[in-house]
Amino acid sequence: MESITLANAQPTRRKPWFQPFLKSEALTGYFLISPAVFLMLVLLAYPFVLAVWISMTDRVLGEPGKLVWFTNFYKLIQAPIFQNTVWNSFVYTFATVFLKMFLGVILALVLNQEIPCRNLIRGAILLPWIVPTSLSVLTWLWMFDSLFSVANYILLGLGLIQKKIPWLGDPFWAMVSVVIVNTWRGLPFFAVSFLAGLMTIPKELYEAAETDGAKQFRQFWHITLPLLQPVIAVVVLFTTIWTFADFQIVYILTHGGPINATQIFATMAYDVALVAGRIGEGSAISLFLFPALLIVIIFMLKFLRRE
Image 1 (cartoon, rainbow, N blue to C red):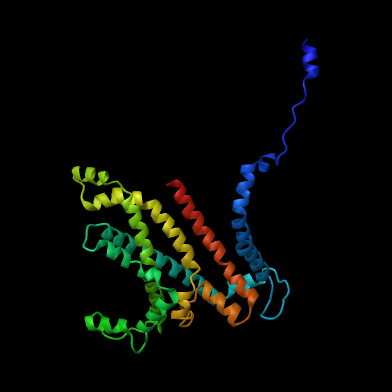
Image 2: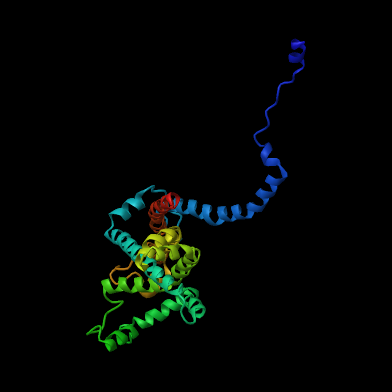
């Protein structure tokens, strides 16, 4: 009897590896995400691969060029102006992100209090973020003008300075100027994001801490800041990426000057690739952003995962 059963038993066939993908639900899912995948391939993957290829050529404007492999990268690393650009990019990015984070927390704490016209102030605080970048930066360019600087007029009137500051004519003050403008423009995004995080913290935690005799600073340090850390990490991550790739603020205010004191990756790539016509070298400059951003992203994602 046992032998008959074994003889009649049919061997089980393994399902094809692609069979789960043929289910109606899977096909619907692939159909829905196909536009996004197509756009990512066309708008992200293809330009990135093309930029990598061009960066390894000596291509100039109007000529195809020839393959030189990593010569452009080697030349850039040896160039003092590029070394200065790398330093400026990191200084510009970390200074603005730190100021926006520090001031954003303070502003969010203020907006979270019961103050008159709170909703109106919350809406008005978004104006620097809403106004087009080029328009707002042109206003700051007029405010930092060497002859008719409104900033100098106010500071002289308040007695905070004794002589006019060459905002855009001095290397140090030029970097300070672009940092101020970037901080002013990005501060609303930080403040509103942190405010949203503050509103999710249960009030019972503060009431319990107050009952135990904890002062406001201890409440902030042991309750607000730890619970706000995930929001801070996400906002800092995105802002760091945006700031590293920033172009409009620096280019409109200083064009990378004076004496390349505010030259960053984006402005130098523009000058080399489009103004000077050395497209291969300009693509290599742009690609130097990738490892810098990759390091920052890995660090921030590890922090978020740990939290």
